[in-house]
Figure 1 (tube, rainbow, N blue to C red):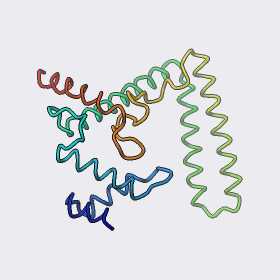
Figure 2: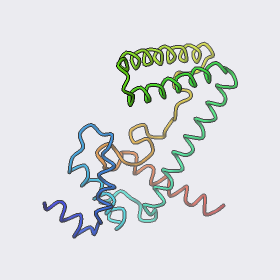
Figure 3: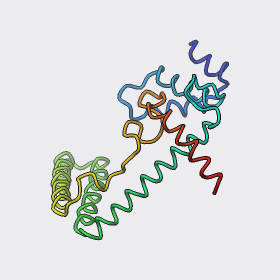
Figure 4: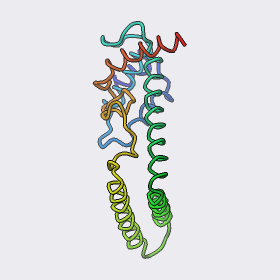
Length: 191
């Protein structure tokens, strides 16, 4: 296949790197060769600095990726702060979430078990999780919290602050994040 020859000959990728790109297709509904090619092409462009326009020459791809990582980490920390706040004000929510977690673990055990009634038990546990989810929603709203208050709040909901869309290409936020990364890099350099 010409496309694979390009990966190995022109881009000098190893089989491990190609397999890593293939691994990125897990979780998408219709993975295909074009998706893998797009990932490898983007990696190659970032590595060589040939971005096809749009990326500032003063901001290396590694800095942009560090900035995306910083954004994800910040969103994670903020979500944890909000969880602590909610748990402090409404301890019952933490108990509900723990019950949901236990139900999830029980479902996992049932799925790999050889119990004859496992489908019924899984359904029962899923119904219990649904009930607990509704209970959590009521508790949140009764205490003036938005339903998604404890969730991660990304700068970009499309790529979840990764810079990569579902097709393996650059997200539409990439140019904006590049400009932000440049300012972020300068701010860090001054510190």
